[in-house]
Length: 271
Image 1: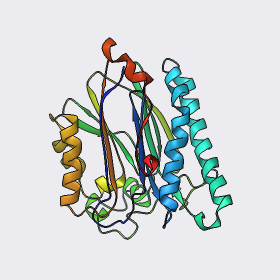
Image 2: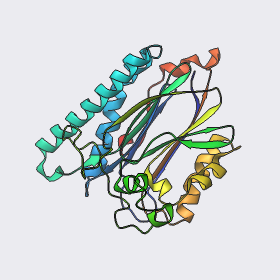
Image 3: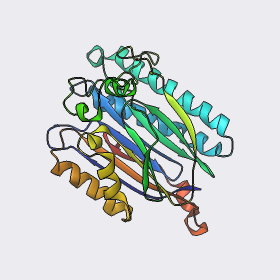
Image 4: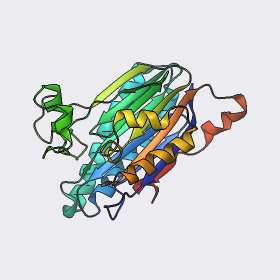
């Protein structure tokens, strides 16, 4: 099966002057990257991540039936992205410290492969239940996992946005010495009509998982994507926000030509 229906949106938000988010979507692959690094560094880092990942898309698609090999290719893509970022930093000293998150899903016949580093998120809506598939690489998430803070304390915590891992051209090194700082590559069983959501952290900075589920449940994907952006803006939108909603289902023979279409890009990667 494939991502047969896709709705993708990106928005500057109400505070940021530029969009440091990048994204791509195709029936076989969807991905979101959220850059950081000040000035243009964040835009460049997220663009490198998405554009480099796109070069692996044909190989990822060809390995749909070989999940072990697909996982290896996803790992290779991560390493390649990190090296490309390192090369860019070496050529431009002013970009030192730039980096990006990356969260991607690759479609196979009866599963999805998750590639995740940072705090962009992947969700699955199945039978009315929203499940988070990714685990944030943040100081806050580690404190939550250790039981040292509660969910109620997250919003006002001074380290709310501190990452423990990102793609920074440093050979996948940790940012803050976290205990659970390793890129995630997982294969999840998938079912027909699952809805998958990828988002940058600008979404969950404003909306809870419960609010997200309410917005996307039982709505056409285009409307749901628009509503997620609108709700984020209504909540103050302190950051860029990018969302991709995708339905997992068989691709009708009449739509097989979609597989031959080029990958679509959003945000900094579109420029």
